[in-house]
Amino acid sequence: MKHLLLKLEPIIWLLFGAGLSVGTMLLTGFVLVVGLAIPMGLVPSDALDYERAHALASNGFGRLVLLGLIALPLWKGAHHVRSLSVDFNGGDRDGAVGVLVYTAAALCSLIAIVAVVRL
Image 1 (tube, helix red, strand yellow):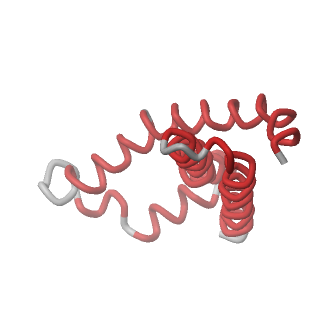
Image 2 (image 1 turned 120 degrees about the vertical axis):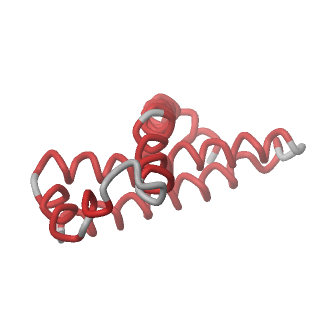
């Protein structure tokens, strides 16, 4: 298993880096708008009503952004869980943990792709 993870390491780091960027920039802004600005009245409450949000998520660019907001932070989280396992003396089981968390991230990403395409 460890050999397979070493071969996939560049792809995993690419997804981790993209997830880190998306999680830091886009997802933080999204949470600030939805979680703080709308409830505080800084943004009109109809800014994200169903029709408007569905129209945004139904076009190609909106679907791509939505998929990035869902799938890429999953890979970031998976990599952090794997690193946390190694930090807590889990180096001997790094291969199994890596396969488990990256498989979970891949499956959840596939579910997100299916859900976004079906919008």
